[in-house]
Length: 403
Image 1 (cartoon, helix red, strand yellow):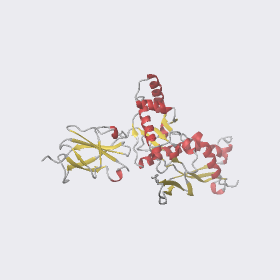
Image 2 (tube, rainbow, N blue to C red; image 1 turned 135 degrees about the vertical axis):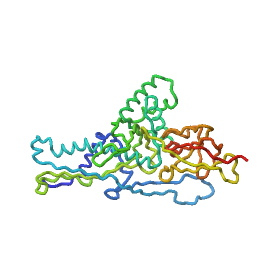
Image 3 (cartoon, rainbow, N blue to C red; image 1 turned 30 degrees about the vertical axis):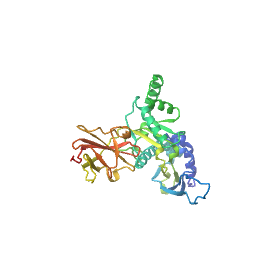
């Protein structure tokens, strides 16, 4: 039997199967040819174009002509290099009436190991990469009373960021599927509901909903062999995505079956190798959003001191953040404070919108002076660019004395 590298044909067959065998098949299977190009076997390049806005014209003069666009290619190296091999004795095949054939072995491996692993790699990698862009997801243990509220918040954010309404996909666990169906049935009969619930009900019929087993929706996995739950994994309960925000490049470099030989002790040897990954396209992070169970607010620590500015007045204070600092500060982070006389204002939950809480005022710690009474309690929270909280803490306030 000749040895044939059938990697290309194998990859094509897998690609055709993806929509039917992967829970996130719609993300793997969409046409992506225009979103990237291959520069070598394990690197793709993503094009991006930017232009300036329009400007006023004149009937009497000719505007100065200049280049008003720029374009570049961003290289992305595939991080997921996976291999699999197997030894099969010819008698194992003949003595099982062909059940233990090469085709059956690879089919079983694909369906029970590879495809679940690909699902798990995609969801955990997208979540990690999304967080790395400076985004904070919602954290909630969803109930019938809250599932539509969080769904509405996710949809609202994507609409606010000009993510196309058509084509969004909501991936949910089986438990959330039950909650969502119960909530929709309840509120459509109830009639009396908030504006948020009304919007969510209208969205439900416009979004493709896919139900995914809960063990395929975790924030991290151990991929040493296959994919098992990571030590710090959290449950993702809802994942809203527009497929245009994601690419899933994949290259099978090698897939080959060697016939029995002296070098293999008379056994068939099968080996396959792939380079694959998933990426959020540049500036498309707003096309994704998550609800994750049991995330907790990090502790924000800081000091306050009386302002020494020449024009400082009674109550003026300067804040110095001691945590989070450095790499623990998300890109685009915003800061908010609230003061109260005897007890500290509560820190909002992880992922909650501090921008919607009237007690809090936004400030910039490195430049702004705040005002409050010495001895009062001050609470400071840190949020992502959307105003979703990820760190917070309280302390006694020290400010400039009167007189």
